[in-house]
Length: 262
Image 1 (cartoon, one colour):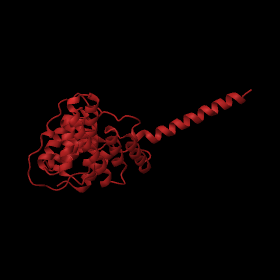
Image 2 (cartoon, rainbow, N blue to C red):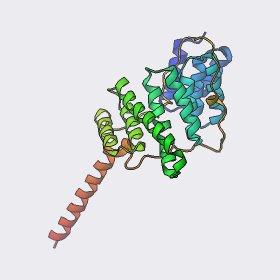
Image 3 (cartoon, rainbow, N blue to C red):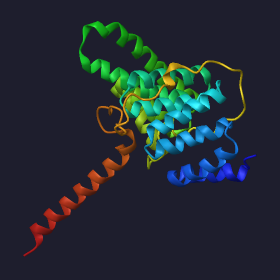
Image 4 (cartoon, rainbow, N blue to C red):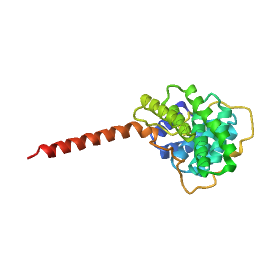
């Protein structure tokens, strides 16, 4: 049986960004316990961090088979599909995570990013045929934006997810408010991306069919970022202002020195 020390070691490696070392250790642990769904979730996280998206998706699928009522495999799948720019698939996987974990803030965070990015893409298309779908998706995104901070009112990641969702839903004032709140909680604005940071899954659950969202990604050419929000990204907002202020001060001092230097 895998010891708590081994799991703690894997988590420490993942949290410190040592994904290759984590994957190597997980390979040994999974060889000893191939039916441990929580280990397959961790393996998916490690492979995702290493950019091995096809292998990460396979691990997520295996985890879903072993833990069919856990939201975590779907969080991993949603993140992978977002990286290959399959926003439809990413949103479906995020919805499944929310269905399985309605009180899990990580699931709502992922839905904020996935559905928000999909809404942004559909809105940019300008096609009248998708207007009704845009309205439905907008309602879903706004619900996710409210729900994530209701479940995690003291977490900066929740407010950053809310800011992304609100900006994609064309609510810039509310998005900036959420961004400011995130900066108040965590001025540095660092932390793992939504969906990739979820804690290990524990406990088996009744069998159920794994959803189609866990099929292999359509593209493996390499990770692609989700469509960015309009305006300054929340995580960089505070530091951008500080750097701008410092540059202004330096400019003023330079001008003053030039004036009073003989």
